[in-house]
Amino acid sequence: MRSTFVEIYYFLLALEPRYKIVLFMILALLITGVIMLTIVLRERSRKNGNEARERRIKRMVESIIQEVVFTDQDSSELKDAVKKIQRAIDSPLYRRSNMAILNDLLLYYHRNLGGEAFIRIENLYREVGLKQMALESLRSDDWHLKAKAINDLSTMRMGETLFEILQYTDDPDQNIRYEAQYAAVKLGGKKAMKFLDDLETPMSEWQQIRLLDQALKFEYELIDNIGPWLKSKNDSVVIFALILMRHLNQYHERNELRKLLYHRNERVQEKAIETAIELAYGECLENLYEVFELTKNPRIKTRVLRAMGELGGAEEVGFLRETISSSKEYDILLEAAKSLKRMGRHDVLRGYQEKELSEKSENIVKHVLDDRI
Amino acid sequence: MSDKAKILIVDDEPLIRDALAFKLTKDGYDVDTAEDGEKAIQKIESEEYQIIISDIMMPFISGFELVKILKERGTDAPVLMLTSLNSETAVLKAFDLGADDFMTKPFSPNELSVRIKKLLKNAQK
Image 1: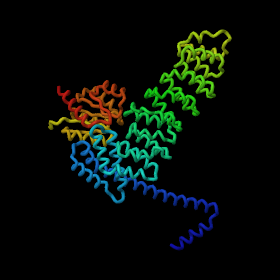
Image 2: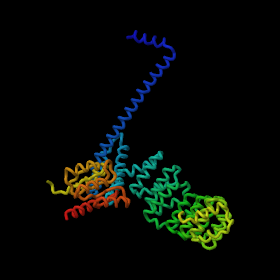
Image 3: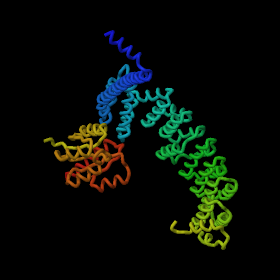
Image 4: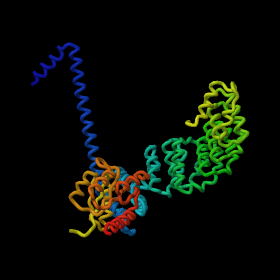
């Protein structure tokens, strides 16, 4: 046996270097393959084990949950059910993971069931300690645990946790603060929206839509004081307040709206002009002339022209007519012509003298006058 | 043969299927389940049901197709659609194809019980 190994050793030693390299690479690949296979098999067996545990837990607790959710139970029966569930998920090693399985199960039922069942699931959520677990996760350092905990607490309508959640509405982590803001509006309604007063971090458009959608579901029409939000240093809060102003027809904030027409942020300016149109705020027309002169942004100019078409009268017709004959920018020309058409002043658009307009302007006017467009 | 009304629940979500089966068994019905439209048709061919509760979005045969097939075959059992789709289009399509009632998820189990009673009463007339 020994002599065989010695022979192999001398055989390898005698090989040319290039064959030695090839052999070495084959050996390295084989070793890597064995290591990889071991890892894969171990991971698969761990995954299978977790899945089997999940199935077992679900099988054990499902019938207890159904009993609680679908039957009238007194407090002692509920306590018994809670004890049974806690026994089923109790494990020195996997308690937290078992709780997570139970959490997902209750969330699933909550998403699909309504009426009395809805309230029973929420009670069960509290009683089995999932609310407590979510509150503990809120103190974790992992952003995903915090965000998930906030989401769970708001889904399960744990109103008593609102104070804890409000502390995260301006969190440096975007995921955490977005979940917290949404949960605050869902759980606390109008009062909880006070967090917007001091919000320093920006809100994305998507987040604004989420908050608006949530606000629409409750006493949204009772939001009566958006003034501080219109004055906020946070531009995204100002934009959100303008959206609310439109939805709520808060005409009494019009003076603040007038100031926002001159806002340093062009997105706020744009939103303010849109709001003025929606609220039919014709008194701001004199400011719109100023904005048109002051701004260099063609997008703002076109918005102003549109507002003139929507809100203006005879005085604005002259300005729009003049803009068509003097401006050289396509978008501005087009918007001025469209505004005149919107005002029903086809006569003005048709009344230009020969050679009064450039060929480009003339084509735009013809284009706008075409009723097929 | 039992005098309990026999109900078939068709839903691809096992948790919903089991929960509904539990609730309706508690209500005193004889409950059977199927996880998709194909299996539901097989069961309906071999058994007689008084009510069929079906989801809409299911693999192989959707709830809409299932209602259509059942009505074409002249199945008398009323069909209650129970789905997460809550658009007007879905409701209209379901009734147009011959569904007898429509409920959206999240649903109240008590409301479901009442609707089933009503459907059974109407079917007996």
